[in-house]
Amino acid sequence: MFHVEQFVRMSKYKPNFITKDYFKSQEKFELVWDEAYQIFKTQPQPDAKEIGKYYDSEAYISHSNQIKNLMDLAYGVAKQLMLKKKLSWVNSIVKKKASILDIGCGTGDVLWLLQKNKFEVQGIEPNAKARKIAQEKDLQIHADLKEVKDTFDLISMFHVLEHVHDPFSYVEDLHQYLNSDAYVMVAVPNFNSYDANYYQEHWAAFDVPRHLFHFSAYGIKKLFQERGFLFIEQKPLILDAYYVSLLSEKYKGSNSKLKALQVAWKSNSLARTSNEWSSQLYVFKKAK
Image 1 (tube, helix red, strand yellow):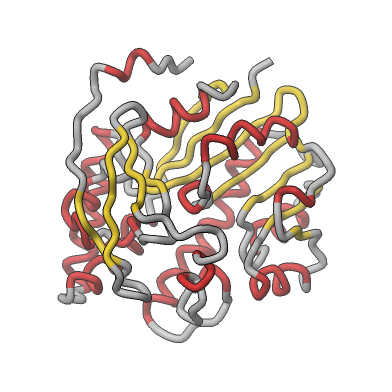
Image 2 (cartoon, helix red, strand yellow):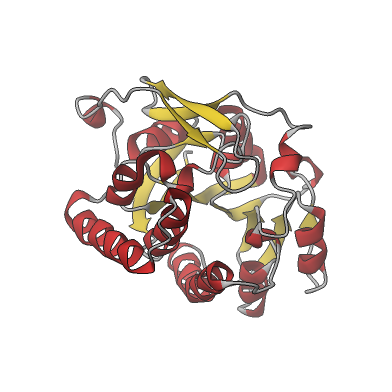
């Protein structure tokens, strides 16, 4: 079992720094260090009414299945490869016919595969366009967590928590949607990875202001443990380093595909020893 106290001695102060929204607005934002949780917080944070305009783009491919350029293709390939991996992770945690809620389900590809494999599934997707695509796959999709009336054996959140305005309250609220002995799978980018340190303010996974919080392994574990969850295990999302590095090279202005592949390969190689992958999946269990 993971104990937060074991990691306090490993904490390192990180200075605040400026990055910008390379994806859409080109506006500058500050990443402010939270020493207690070892996380960064985006400042200023657009409120719930304002944040939508930063997602309003045909290029935001998690809300679309269209392939228009090389980055879309890279994302699509990674997405398809990850589908089977996610299915295997779910199979290792819960039994067939288990109930699953996927928060931030996008166009519903993971839920469709899980449903095909005899799991009972529901999803949450706030983006109307992506939600419509998912619903066309005969899936039960909600616009918001507050619409959900059931409880589940597993809640999954892949690259979702970094978008939440108040992840502290959000994680605490998950309990009411979980059965006894239920699990939570949460995947987030890791700013302690080699590719993050290499690209620094150009690291695409900062993705301000859509990403409101930026987590270390210490921070995500402390966040969940302090709110009634037991840490079970963590796993690497190996392909994320390649996609993020390709996008980061574009943000740097070099757009070198070869350099991106070199950085991603080195990041994954070093992570085999440091356990600091570009993105990481964490599994937690609801405490009794």
